[in-house]
Image: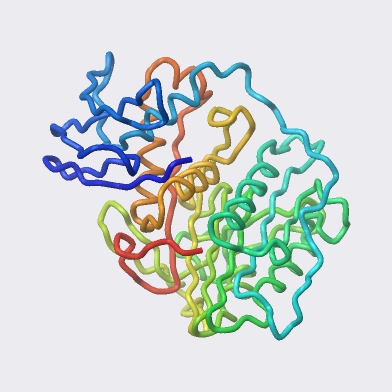
Length: 371
């Protein structure tokens, strides 16, 4: 996929996503839609398109065309991709003294053969693993994968295995280390009795055996992943589940509309931040919302957050956190406002707002993403 860039409309100042070789963007305040050259992969023309029904309100440029092209001609949706019993976990070949500075734990829970089974979580893990290896240089030996497709028992996403792998991710970390925790699965809420939550509810993730062993609560994730982070260590959590906005209980939550950080510190006064490191979380939605998955984008089930995040990070070199979140939400808005094709292929409206939280404040529109 050819890389792109993000430009500002010279008249209305809205951002427009264009391919690197696209000509200068000219626009009225309705912003252009990029029209691809049918004889090449480049967007060689820029035209103002008058939709039949509703004028687009966001200048997301060729993302609209890219999404529409993927939707056109698509047949019936696939319920599940074929998964062979091949492990994505590799033996460690590095001596402890030369441990790589990049490690990741990727967890996708399907809840097989249950009425709440999810179809897209394994695809999400595969897509994230490919992104980390090919785009960000993560060694495959230091990407631990937990799914119900794994042939080895220790990599099935039970509560015990998930907690063990979470501890593995952060143990013996040193300045310069970059860590990624990715989760795709069910998320729930439960009443908070510790006065740690401003809204009175704990957010949770659900292991494959949560019906018997219980959920993993945001307090647990904070104590295992966040509190031990030393100075110079960076953790990214990408959580594609319902109610995932503040899943790490980080003290700073970004309000994109107001362009400011809100205080998420617990009323109890408990310390919820790091030991000097940096923790950043991208949740699929706010704590009150549900997260969706869909077969619309690829013909296979994918989490909407995971698909958009992976797709955008592959296309655009070094976007800022603000650009990434804006483009994801604008794409979902465009789908919701779309014509008959989009409305037919999406069974329901996408009503989730990706949420950024952090252990400390920074400028999301000047800080580039480096996993």
